[in-house]
Amino acid sequence: NWNEDFLFGYQFLNGSNPVMISKCMNLPDKFAVTQEMVEGSLDRGRSLQEELKVRKK
Image 1 (cartoon, helix red, strand yellow):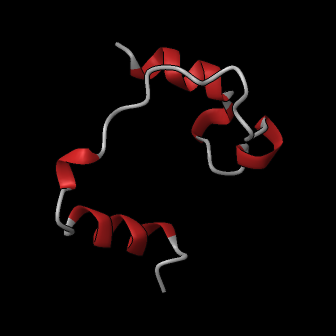
Image 2 (image 1 turned 45 degrees about the vertical axis):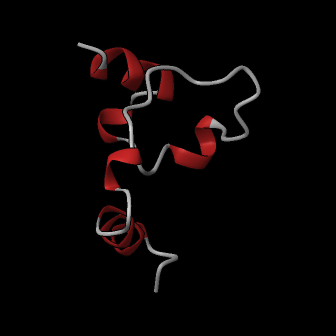
């Protein structure tokens, strides 16, 4: 089922253009995802902005 993250990732990376994936460096001003929507998926209880700062290093 491609609705699950791991299978979507597998299929995308094995598709016709796997180099199309790039690292997210910032969030758009009108980003439709809220902290509450993703807090269960983030490690260490960080916010999305905090994760971006850590990942930039």
